[in-house]
Length: 180
Image 1: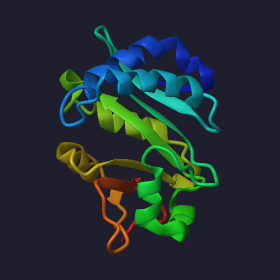
Image 2: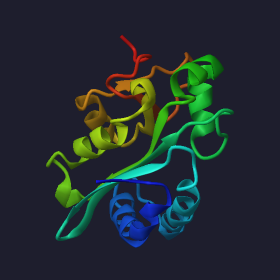
Image 3: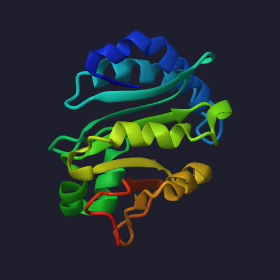
Image 4: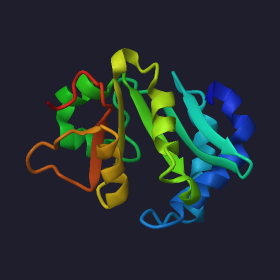
């Protein structure tokens, strides 16, 4: 199911619970402060242009969710954005990311992994991405996550020489700027 804008806040507590369950575990190991920051960010993110959330539910509750919005110009400078900008350079950031659908969070509880939940969430949330342009970033240290995105057909954007960090930028399977 997909929800746009502030309507997602009806599920805020369940999304926070799923976020905490997923990201407090390895390899993320996020603490209470970072988890609380997600709750605060969600309140602000729902006001972003093009915000949407997809979520999978079962009798157990929210099994997983994804949040996304349209990346605006100028390119943001908080969180992992400076690393992305340094690795890609201003020209590729403009061409590949600005105006594209940015997948901010994808969280799938351990019991729902391997069931197609992550694939379904990514497919649903990117279904109406402008000109098939969607992107996300993750940590290179999350090897299983990186492997999953590759298996699902997402394309890693190579970093400019000498700018590699632990951040990996992926373009959606049908992004027109994907590496060939």
